[in-house]
Amino acid sequence: ADLDESKPPSAELLEALKEFAGIPAEASGPDSLAILAFLYMCLAISAKYGDVPSVDIVVWSELPTGAGLGSSAAYAVCLAAALLHACGAISCPLKDGEITARWTEEEMTLINSWAFQGERVIHGNPSGVDNAVGTWVSGAGQIHAACEHGSFSWCSLQLLSCALGEVLKMKDLLSRTIPPYLGGLCAETMHVFHFRWSPEIPIRKNQSVKEELFDINQHHLNVIGVGHPSLDRLCRVTASHGLHSKLTGAGGGGCG
Image (cartoon, rainbow, N blue to C red; front, side):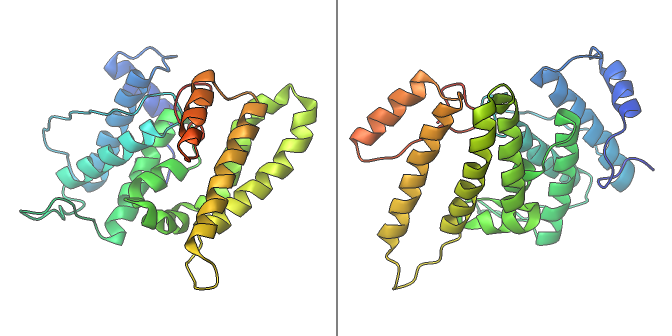
């Protein structure tokens, strides 16, 4: 009865699954957490929709783990979709001869809810932003679907504020000055990326605002201490070609 996409995984069940898989109780490595998420999702989805048949699961990714790029959410979304399809809870929309296809809104909502469960196993109390974006966004034009289904705007503000928490804890001045700036930057960014072209506002002008926001954000990220020399080099090289770059993910490394 507790195996449901609306309820967080219980600590007792996760401990039992760790014991079953031979995962140490305090294990926190990505491989151990990925196995645990798979076991929980397979068990829970089987309990609700009928046994998942015997299948081989192969995971392949170029996303670095632990870099704040959403690799766990991408894994959880793919796993949820695969397991739900395997037990017949969702259809297979891909037709012969087609390269891409999309599930129905209802099916994607189900995939997203189970992917969130996988994220809960891995992270404990995630925001839900990463799995929502992983489910709903297939291109830049789909960001609005993620906004609707994942409360993207407000979650982004909360997520960014939490990410800065540890950095600001020991820096009293920054803790008073960065949050107001952050709120303003997020609000302006959401406004710009929700922009719809009109004859009164040239597309190029809107693009230049996005470029300025990238540069401003990168400078402030360096100020709070999450930059990296390799990213500074990246920004210098791209700037010499008239391009604009910034770090992505958790920072402190070479992802830009």
